[in-house]
Length: 147
Image 1 (cartoon, rainbow, N blue to C red):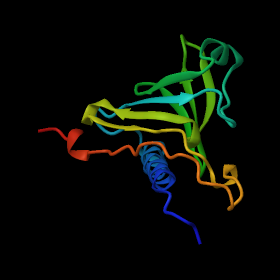
Image 2: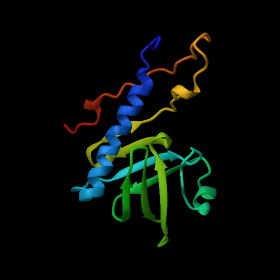
Image 3: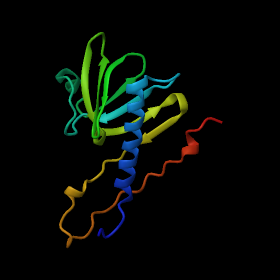
Image 4: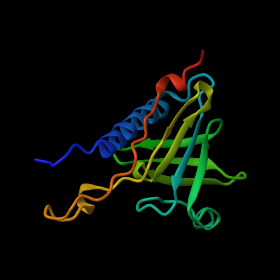
């Protein structure tokens, strides 16, 4: 049994599940109404697949916009893949949920910020003291609701 409840990783998994559900709906039915997404991700995370010229241009972090033109949105358990248009040049990319930094839908004033998480595999043996925890991020949903 764990020595403590890891709320940070539990929240991270829940937020990834929420985004996975949203993206699955968009893949199946398209973007409803005025919805669109700004998705910022860490381009150095293992599993990120993107064109070399994009990785050179965005060596640490990149924000994509899912709005007017996108194709082949495929959502899996650990990542999503999408083709986006960069100056009339379609590019396929795969983004693991662990690479996400922010997910924003400005049409409804909704946003999530992801902090880097440590997986259970990265923890030391049980006899070591626990690593310092980062301050919790509290998401107040009423902040994102329209009046």
